[in-house]
Amino acid sequence: MPPLSNGDWPELQPGWVWLCGAGPGDAGLLTLHGLNALQQADVIVYDALVGDGILQWAPQAEHIYAGKRGGKASSKQRDISLTLVELALEGRKVVRLKGGDPFVFGRGGEEAQTLVQHGIPIRIVPGISAGIGGLAYAGIPVTHRDVNQCVTFLTGHDKAGDAPTSLDWEAIAKGSQVIVVYMGMKHIDRIADQLIAGGRPKDDPVAFVTSATTGNQTVLESTLQNAAADAAASGLEPPSIVCIGRAVELRKVLDWQSMIVGIQPRDLDPLGRGRPAESA
Ligand code: SAH
Picture 1 (cartoon, rainbow, N blue to C red):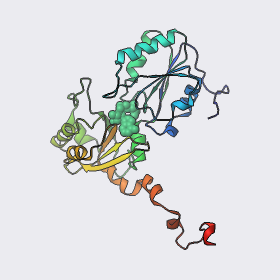
Picture 2 (cartoon, rainbow, N blue to C red):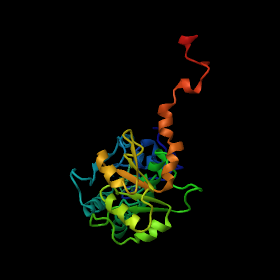
Picture 3 (tube, protein in one colour):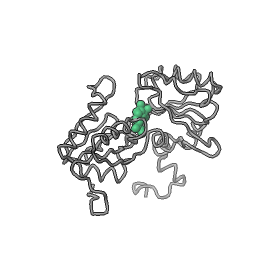
Picture 4 (cartoon, helix red, strand yellow):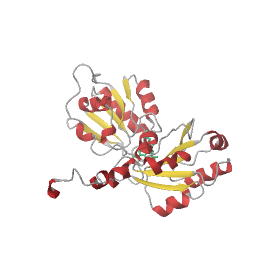
C-alpha cells in the first residue's frame, strides 16, 4: 500500500488520538482516512472485531490488543480509555482502531469523552458499520423505496448485558419497517417476543448475518417467530448482525456474493465462444 501522506492528507501529530473505524471485516472496507491514520501511527490499540489483514498496513506501529469478547482476556473499558490517555501523554501518535464505525454501538463516544476530558486532541475517522455494510454483503439493502422509509438500529444488550428494557418496543414494532439489531444473538428470543407483542407479524423475515464481509460470512434466514430456535439450532457464533423486516426478501435477487461464486464462465457464454484456448 503506497503511503497517502503527500501533504493533502491530515497529519497525525504526536500526542493526538485518532479514533478510527476499521469497517466490518473485509480489509478493503477501511476508508482512505483510516489507511492514512494507520500509516502514520506509532501505536495502535485495536479491538477483537478489527478485520484480519488491516493491521498489516501498519508494520511500523506497536499493536496493542484491547478486545473484550467473551472467553478472551478482557480489558475494562475504563482501562482502555486511560491507556489511550497515557499513550497520548507520552507523546505518541495513537490510533484507536475499532470495528465498524467507532460511534455506532462501539463505546467510541465514551472513549472520545475521556480523551477530551483529559485535554487530549482527537480526530474521528468514521467507518462502514456492520449494520449497513455487513447487510450489503448479504444482499440486503438497508433501505429500499418499496420496503421502508426508515430504519431502526438497536442494540440487543444494555449496559448490564440484558435485553434493553428502556426501549418502546411497540413503537419500534409498528413504526420501523426495517430493524437492525447489533449484539442481538444472545437475546433474540426476548427481542422477537417483544416485537411480536408490539404488533409485528410472526412471519416477518429475519436474517442473521454472521462474520459479515469476512471469508467466514454466513447468512441464516428465518422468521421472527422461529428466529431464536433457528439461531440456536444453527450453532452460529457471534458476531452477528440481525435484520428484521421485508428488506431480507430482497436477498433472493440481490445475494451478489453467491452470484460471484455461482456464475461460471460457461453460464456467461452459452454458445461456447470465447472459451479458453484448449477448445480451439
Ligand atoms: N462499531 C461496530 C459495532 C460494534 S458492536 C459497527 O459499527 O459495526 C458489536 C456488534 O456489531 C456485534 O455484536 C455484531 O452485532 C456487530 N458486528 C460487528 N462486526 C460484525 C461482522 N463482521 N459481522 C456481523 N456482525 C458484526
